[in-house]
Image (cartoon, rainbow, N blue to C red):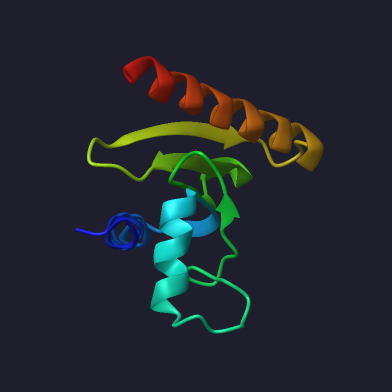
Length: 117
C-alpha cells in the first residue's frame, strides 16, 4: 500500500470514532506522491482539506471534543507499526501552551522513531 493509502486508511478509522484531521506532517517522498496524485496542478497542495507540512515524520494530528469541555489531541504515526501519543487539553488552556505541548509531543515521537532505527 502506498504511504498516502496508509494516511487515508488511518484517517478513515479515526473519523469513524469522531476525530477530525487538524494537521498532516509528511516526508518529502509522501509529499511527492501527493503532488503526483494532483497531476502537477498549480493549486495549493492539500490532503483531506489540510495543507501538509514537510517533516521528517509521516504523521497526523487529530482532535476531537472530550468530556468536561476538554479537547483531545492525538499525534498518530503513519507507518506499518501503529504508534500514537495522546494529550488532553483543558478548556481554559492557552493556545500558546497547547502548541508547546504539541511541539514536545512531536519531539518525543522523533526520539522514539530514532531509537528504533
